[in-house]
Length: 278
Image (cartoon, rainbow, N blue to C red; front, side, top):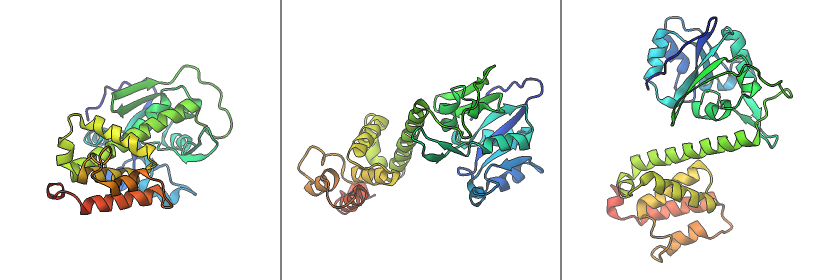
């Protein structure tokens, strides 16, 4: 990816926030790029320290690290500026590891995921902008560059609580990520079926919505559902050629949706046309 132009104000420091879940052995990689990288894994302390291997890492930016970051996929991290030094800023970000949904449930916030943070930091939320003066976030729509508002509202409560609007935006990001995962799955396992579609992304989105309406709502359910489409196509939906599939996929039973879609995928593989198995 091409990095945006970065202009720092007097006293600002530039940081990378990198996703350890997307970058295997991230800490080792940092030492391969820089002799003495200054960084903080956010999952450094209990109760999150057991997840350190996949922890977001706050890293002081340097020319070698920025050049390396430029070679990474866009979903692996983002840039931020702050007047704080490394340790105080890391402590501020650690207060966002776990946030509350509008329904009072606790969720682990994907702090280093730029799409996730873009849909939240577009608002002047004081919890999210505390200690941060500028952000540069790579998204599907391109880079977003935002600066902190001159005046932020007072913090409410002792935990960041997402609004209904923020929660809805997170849902949209999650859904798009699932569609992207399905597209990659079809590219790898069913390229012929995918190539048959005039508008493959629209085809995936349409069938993903249908799968969700049928009760297949986890990522695994969705991939198994698309295995069915990959093996036998979509003629079973309106035709009578595959009554067994129609039963598994459209008729509620004592089995869970996850069990039914797995049975359907296995059945479809056994009855696939030879060209779909190559």
